Amino acid sequence: MARIHLTLPDEFIFTTELPVRVSDLNYGAHVGNDSILTLMQEARVIFYRTLGFKDEISFEGSIGQIIADAAIQYKSEAFLGELLIIKIAVDDFSKYGFDMYYVIENKETGKEVARGKTGVVCFDYEKRKIATIPDVLLSKLKL
Image (tube, rainbow, N blue to C red; front, side, top):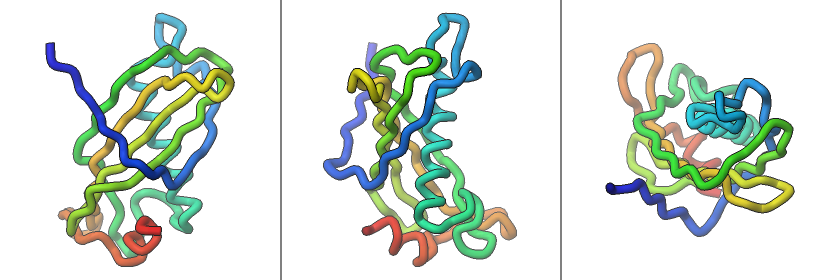
């Protein structure tokens, strides 16, 4: 059976910490597969805020982002109360978007919990169509 394999960029430009909450757990008492996407989104919003943006939908005027695709490799379990370190990298820029990569690790053990990628496409929420990456976002991402 084919498996997803994510090759990570060499340089990560942002790191944050998030605790595992009870709402992140599934019936196996570990972080659920769906919660990994939520943790990635939370880290992404924190990242954008450090760049000076309020959220994901207002980079410049009515231009924000949508997620075009997502891929996750699950590596190990994470449990209630553990502190996770989430690292973010950006790569593969085009006129309309880029890929954002995530590595999620257990802070105490250093063990990798998951790695993921989201395809980010800029979107004009007024015109309801894709848009070019605003210069203000591009300049902040290409540090």
